[in-house]
Length: 327
Length: 243
Image 1 (tube, rainbow over the protein chains, first blue to last red):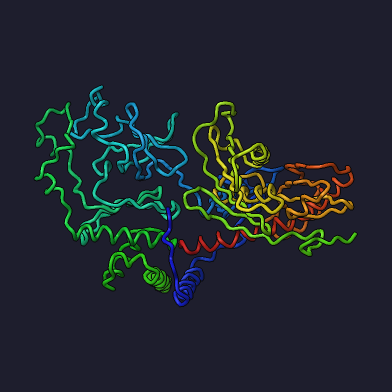
Image 2: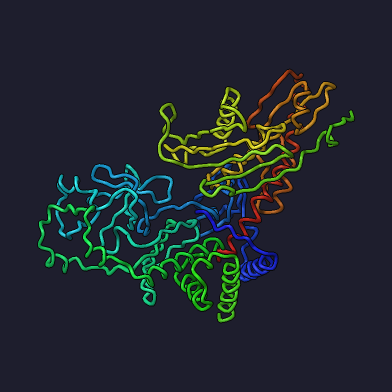
């Protein structure tokens, strides 16, 4: 999660400072009374049965904070939310992970959490789409499906005894190829209704993983399983594609157009700029940054320069102030 | 008794403090802490799954790696590791993440006296940066007794070498209630808060030791204020930026 090192000139520093201050003044007033350091006692109305949530502890009847952060209250629950917290998986989260090991009947993935997550062979759709028991042969051929260092998109299934389990039971999950994986700090990604986005005008797919991994890649048509069954007549048991001899025709078919690649790089750089500035990553803001860079006819690598970062900050300040005036 | 310290400080005066957090990108939490010339960098990784063989799996275990600025890791470094481990085991709430290991790596950048307290402060700031729940913050101070039985705080390396004896003391931080009226009460009874760690070198009388304790505890107020100011502004600024 290395941030871009910005070399700002004096005027740029001043402008950036101004834009950030503007944003601060616009934001709903963060109650400074609510920010708390470790071992501070939290004011609580003792008559209500208060539930002590994460980041709190009971000390002689006083509710005391164990983390530095902001106190949040939801009905009777009181908890402390840290601002730079690590990713905490919840059931149903869309995450993107990288395979680190192929184990017996499962893959182990790194999802930027304190433990590694497991994707069971049985929690995945078979490539030929048939629903059947996984045989020993399937286990031996696991490496044909995913290998080490592959990037996978999956959904959190839950915490089982041996760790965190994922599932990839839909065509929209699975191996991701032809694109870029960008890591940002997890708190910049908030849980939303849609995490899979398709930018039609650029022909790219954008997957915003809740664990701070963001995938920008070439658009892949989500194929229907039923149609696939009729088309493929090959033996469903044996699936051993020979990777070494990818024929020339296949290579040509898989070739990604230069325009698409440029769009992928542009979107990826947009995400990098946003993560350096510390803004929350959503589809609208990414689109806004891409449009801004295209309207200025900026070269892709110039997007990581200091001038563009300052412009993005200023534009965001304008956008938020105009949003506030509309309300 | 008037004391002439080489750098002109009064006996109760600390060296200028500097603390910065989130200095390392790949560590889960990191902090540097400088007291005058002494500078230490601490990084926290964790909690990671699994504990070592002779550790209790029902509790979180803490692993300290001490890296000296020059030379190979020797016995003194192992001793520092053990002291830090015991200190942080009493601060962290170990029942929250059972069967996990949290690693704290301490790298000495420059040693100019009061190294262990500086390391403890740095590691504590790094733990806060990593978001690991703690019972209270550890505030560490070094008191030394000179030849003419004068007690000075935060000695530099020269003063430490000339001193008759010195003690590293670690106290829990003073609490400030979010409700302003209560904080007036908090400062009134400092003795009630307790002590976490005390490491002494050399021979000193019992009275001297008790004086050291008093002086040390009195300074924890100042250090706690510094820590609090350090942790707060960044949090509110980040929250508003993120929107």
